[in-house]
Length: 109
Image (tube, rainbow, N blue to C red; front, side, top):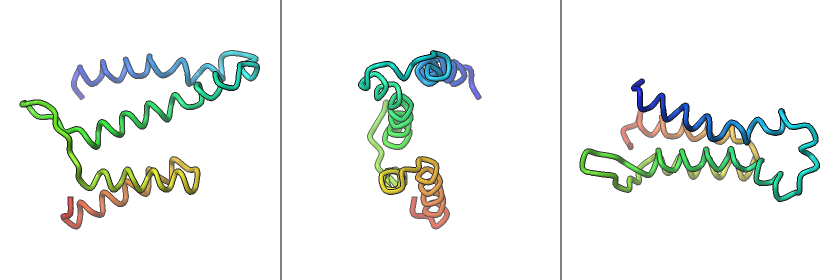
């Protein structure tokens, strides 16, 4: 790991941890308005989705960044479909990883 990646990891942790830890640390959080609870519940998945989208659709090179559409997008779509169908993020991620790994093994991606 390089120092910039470690700094980025620490920054992302510092930004997202308070919203994830709030339900455990703040007594009576159930009394917040429904919109606030919905916001707090969706912060984690929103951050994960933005990181996944950047990692799969943006390809960086010394000349700049470019849109990249490959087998990874098939994995993302599969993950989204499984999460929507089964309501299980873990199952969706595992299925997507297995699909992309299989396609790369077969030489498709």
